[in-house]
Image (tube, rainbow, N blue to C red):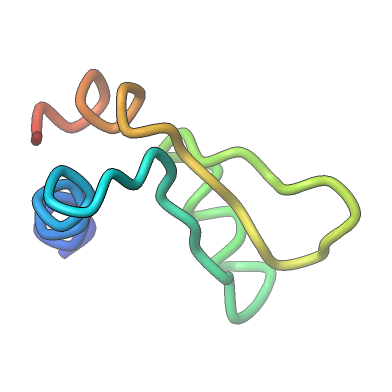
Length: 63
């Protein structure tokens, strides 16, 4: 599911020029899940994480 979601986000980002994927983890377990797949916590937030499009391309092979 994550790969499918990232793939769709990457397609939309190409059309709109977005450079980051932003997620809001609903709990600590979700936060740890996103960290496991290379998302980076946003400073001064407890639930938001980001990933650059270039990182997603390298990590998931989607673009």
